[in-house]
Image (cartoon, rainbow, N blue to C red; front, side, top):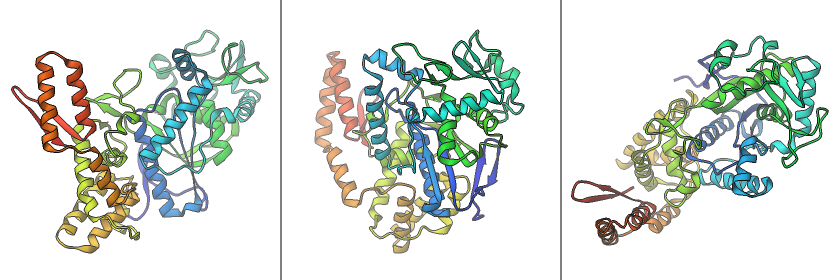
Amino acid sequence: MSSELKLYNTLNRSKQTFVPLNLNNVRVYVCGPTVYDYPHVGNARPLIVFDLLFRLLNKIFGKEKVQYVRNITDVDDKILESAKSKNISIQDLTKEVIKDFQDDCSYLNCLTPTKEPKATDHIQEMIELTTKLIEKKFAYIEKGHVYFEVSKYKDYGSLSNKKIDELISGSRVEISKSKKSPVDFVLWKPSLEDEPGWDSPWGKGRPGWHLECSAMSEKYLGKEFDIHGGGLDLIFPHHENEIAQSTCANETNLLAKFWMHNGYVTVNKEKMSKSDGNFITINELKGKFDGQVIRLAMLSTHYTQPFDWNNQILENSYKSLNKWYDFYSDENETIDPSLLDSLKDDLNTPLFISQLHKLHQEAMDGNTKSGKKLSTACKFIGLFNVNAEGWKDQKSKKSLSEDEVNILIQERNLARDNKDFKRSDEIRDLLNDKGILIEDKENSTTWKYI
């Protein structure tokens, strides 16, 4: 396998050899959370995927030569709506959700990005970028709004591979009578009295979502950088609009050389989303699973493919970690080049994990060197963040004896017979929290450790 780093580039719809614009300054920007509610499992996937990319780039080019910027969107219509529905201030909401998000990152063992800028700290940069677009006649002012005029940008749709007519007919575009065209998007909008707003040449208002990322990426990474990442759902309109406004304002040929997008997280093959109500927050998982289990489960599927959330994949990940921890080593060694090559092939984590299973079998057969390779490789992808004793302690805190499990199942069966479904559900959740999966069959209940 080639030792070159190859990544799938959404812009060209092909896997390409990655060569940074500047070997001494490798720059990555990834869209972070909009902090209106607690992050769900679908949000965990880009955190883990791009954390792994960050680790790999650090290894290939050197930590001092890699910049990883992940923003926080803390002003947005969803945030305003959420604060109103919860009857709390916007500041209190965003502060609380940001703290929870950072706790989630720690739980998933994600490295801290080089920079983690907040949108509200960069309003002046957004105003300056909007002013440039007006002066260059790519944007127009209408009733206190500033819109980007899409028809002025000939390459619009290159990332999503759609034509403007197709985008107008059926896409996620904001409809407004003040726009020249339905596909034009807002750069700046007026704020109501009870909404956050900043003074601007066009009146008190706030930035559009797309503008925020363009301004922050330019400030920290420059007008052109190497990799822009995010979820598949961001290709249009968010990333498409970022490219349009940034390249037009700065008169550049590109915003990012590579565009990487992770696939959806699904539940029963349906996309996990807050709007559909079929989601699990990362916070809900903390009492049930070690963060390593979630991380390994997510990495078991290639990042470009859908990941279907289910108990079986979590159970398999737990069992694998439990076996691998028998060969945990405090010694830090250099990762095996053949293992590294699998990650260089567009983050081929399924292949990497299959190699871990092979190393485990070799270690079981008495190969001490393979055991050390296994430990080193697990640490490299963000596993083994606690030592073997720490792993055992976490297991013991969660586990129940067989007698305790059977007593609880008997109590649950009695509650179900008495139609006390509230108590029945409480016992099921308690067992799940303790790492016990129960399955009801026709006349019996079976259980197993996960």
